[in-house]
Image (tube, rainbow, N blue to C red; front, side, top):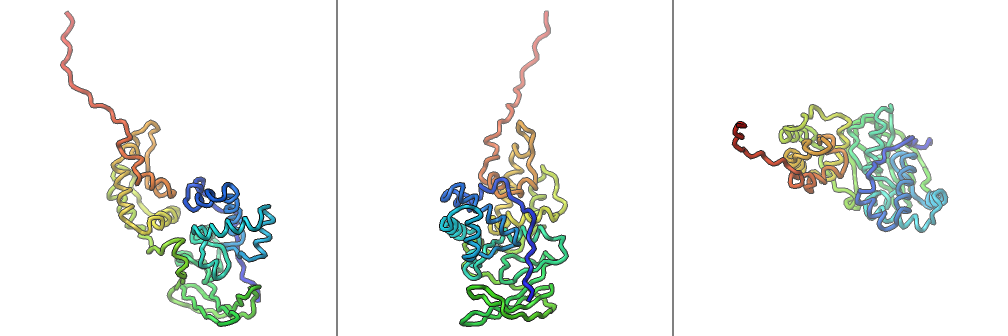
Length: 310
């Protein structure tokens, strides 16, 4: 049987303020720059492979040699990455792979122009319905003690394969079947909850309309473009689908003289600036741009005109 091809990326986005992320900060606090470097090298390896990286003894030995860091140190850092949610613990425990929702979202978004991408249904943590070029592969897993059949429902063609997930993860059989299906089911085990809570579908139009309604001093948002969607989705998940937080942030920048351009730099905030990363909106919510920090011009007092010179 031909092995499922994983199409990796030649490059991947790396936020300039990624060290401000709490998960990264926790790793760096425990392991210093070595921990930070290991995380970046792992991301490089994952995206080179695709949207996940098999993490067995073989990969651990090779990775440790390539980064020139003791394997025990590497594994301690990996365990902390799983602990703090940088990688999905449920998928690591069940399939020995390193991946996350963020990794998968960036990977599939980067490949929207490819004709077809194949993905293991069992490894997927995100809703793939918006990615029309993804072909879902369903696994029938045969263990030594029992056999579990998992079905995939998706609006794309589905391929069923039998895979032996023993120690060596050898492929035993292959049975290919194409079918047109209607719905998609994604199972994420209970151990997945510490990484990221399940969030409802992102209400893009509702967020856009709320901004336009509350922020009259800013340019109106005409449409939610494909470029904006990943940023809005990230903020929606950051605040666990709480629309009240968006309303508070929009109200604050509308009331903020600094955000409206009353500052030395003549800089103005915008909808895109607010959703660009996980720090801008937090600064707004924390009151960094509230008017108490803005020097306002004193109103001129009226005084009677001077008498004409004699």
